[in-house]
Length: 447
Image (cartoon, rainbow, N blue to C red):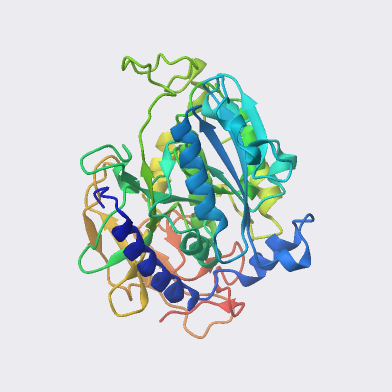
């Protein structure tokens, strides 16, 4: 948790991660039919590959021997996975040189790992906008990985097991500093945490991700590309608010996994900070003209648009029930993107999937005692058997009814997500029975 690194710790952590994989594999995937639908839409895959993932990693990289060595270490760790998953790389050489990279045969090999190379000053959104939808559709996930992250304690086998079981549209590894006392992430909620009240979080839902290492479902890329088309591409700020909000809308519409941090598979942040910083330490004046904030005319802070909603619905309709997706946005009114994301985040029931030292995985609802996203999360756990999500404390039973599932209400008695919600584990539907047991395709009854 504090960034210490040596070979002994790395080996011990690898052994622990293998035990966690066995625990996770005893859980059933969140949506088996959805998993098959996702595979069948990838026309470029052969039948022998259908059990594997294909991932595109998009990285801005420096032109130094150290940066190349870090890449090779990360690549070796990823390609040694035991599930047959494959990784391609789109590399953006923002220092306007790739001299050290070209010295390696794998860099230019047509069958090598690098499928896209761009040389020239660039900001991260400018790089992301160069990944067309036609390319993204070849992959299951797009990993927006900064070039100054190492995978010493990361396990792709564990991470992909979490992806397969929980199916989060947006996730990221937890972040460790390079060494004790150094910088990990400024967003404290995504930094790796240890045991809390006797429970070690393998993965946990959070209010927000951050932009240095998100792993996005490729099905979000069409809508994200639409978003980028209207943004000031010199700043990456508020893009994480956008994909976090997209993920939360799935959760609020149908109890899907919200923004997820995989705590047990962390990355180490080497913290080169040279996209926004100059060599003499001035922030926001780097050679790439990258900046921060809402961009020109505050365009990056605009709300989730109708075109983006339409794109999400189109790209996910064969995978999940997206009926009603985005209806929660009406609660935001004229709020800007971040304020809308913060409002809806307060209505997501957050969960931790934890190892409680009993060789089994348990799920707990939890809340951070501080509402400040930049403060570490002091956890307060809720009872595991609590049937209702936070904000909807009153369980209304419809025991035995074949036309109405149980629901959770608050005092507002208004629309779904505002006055009522479904019990934990139940799925919302915009018609009778309103809350259903998706696995059995029948009304959901918890009482």
